[in-house]
Amino acid sequence: MKPAPNGLVIRAAREDDLATITEIYRYHVAFLTASFEHELPDLQEMTRRWGETIRRGFPYIVAELDGRVLGYAYAGQYRPRVGYRYTVEDSIYLHHEHTGRGLGRALLAELITQCERAGFRQMIAAIGDSENIASIRLHEQFGFTMIGTLKAVCWKFNRWLDSVLMQKDLGDGDRSGPA
Image (cartoon, rainbow, N blue to C red; front, side, top):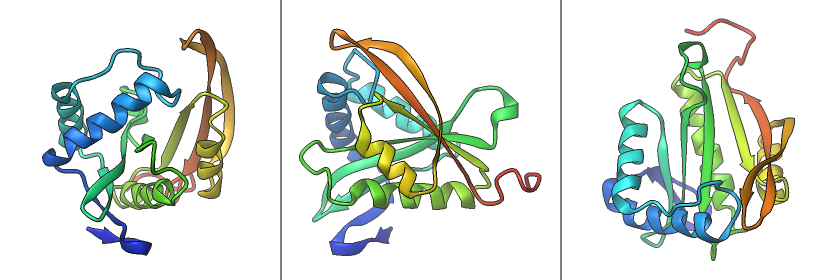
């Protein structure tokens, strides 16, 4: 468990957090463009995803304030082929009523730290919707660089959405071989 400013605690997600995590994510799927999913996953599916992520050794964390989970983040394998094993993709989701309070910053900082500690060398942010300026700026503040924009790759809410790709070196990045 890692305390952050203003009583915020960043800690590993637990199974008893998954109902709240599911609620947060379902809102993003139903009303926002950070996720390109269309079907609302249920608690069973979100539990399966969480279990698979931690079983494979990737970090899955929550931001908790006054005993309430207000956001979560995790890293997962960027692509399934073995050559990508040192590259992760980050995902961050916040409760829609609690944005702009530093939760994303605290989650991303801890996620980067845990990924570096685990020996990963690159982190990719695949940001849904090029209009998601808050996520783009957050990643820029942590040293992510713009790699490119995949134009009109998702059809959601009766419009085309872009996907923005950003990348950050973790640890030594490509300056040395993996441990």
